Amino acid sequence: MLRPKFINHLFQRSYPSLEWIQIEISSYCNGKCVYCPHTEYQKNWQNRYLTMELFQNLIPAFAKTNLVHLQGWGEPFTHPEFFDMLRAAKEAGCMVGTTTNGSLLSREKIEALVKEDLDLIGFSLAGIDERNDSIRRGTSIRKTLECIDEIHKAKAKYQTDNPKIHIAYMLMRSGFDDLDKLPGFLANAGVAQAVISSLSLVVNAEIEAESVFSLPKAEFLELKDRLLQVRADSENLGTEVHFHIVSPFMEKFHCMENAAHAVVVGSDGGVFPCVMSQIPVQGRNDFYFRKQKQPLKKMSFGNIKDNSLDEIWHQKEYRRFLRTYRSGKSPSFCVNCLKGFSDNFTQETSLEQVQAYLREIS
Image (cartoon, rainbow, N blue to C red; front, side, top):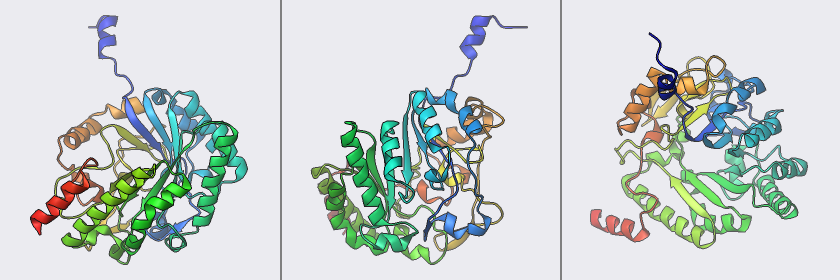
């Protein structure tokens, strides 16, 4: 028996309202960062571009998405159709951002980004001087700062506030001495926002020594204190700072990837709940969790070459995963993921509260 049309309309599914869609338009990268899976898993890495045809399959979802972020495990400016994708996403009515190592940006490309009204551009760093270059091999802190300066000049030329400049800052244990200098560095560069993160994937035994996750409890709590001071000092200088660091002392599951309100689309068109479930490799690859070797896994819920994002979002397996995720419990796939740990302090926790907590447990 057919239902009346108005009943069908009531049960019709619509595109989910998402905070962001992160789209890996390229898994190619010209960098060799020591902590990156692209470097460690190079033999099994799948280099590819997301085709414009598959990108266009996502456009119906953009109208209900706050931000489309053109970046994944590769360098987005390796994609020959980057500007076509930027233009198509902007025409759909959403904000558009990207994150880059800056090495492929020229003055002409920067002016094009400003004229196309890119909303935000993030630069990845792991230091505030040449130490960054020894960690993020193939990139240059000097080149990054030159790019940022060119963006400021282009924004002034075209009298616009966009793109906002963000820094994705990877905090390594060997870089703790830079923390006190970081607020001044960010302010001098005219950075609007910075996110300080620790390693969320330990790709080999050697890099584990650089992981904040391996800090003893007392040192971890001291680091928390320092980061809160960095945030306060930075905000006094006009830069908004957030930090996402992980520790085994934080036992409550709280994912930092926002899988309940965002999706990741891989360069093959696959739809994933987060970047950690989407690393573009084939065959057996291992990572380290608490000094134990673990197999790297993937978890995709469909592909936009076969179904719309709306259909994939509403399928049973995806809904089941999201119910567990939203309940505050760790889905089985998320066990041993460093992004599934969270700190005891929120972004609003004051420095005085942390200091009182430290006195209480000492």
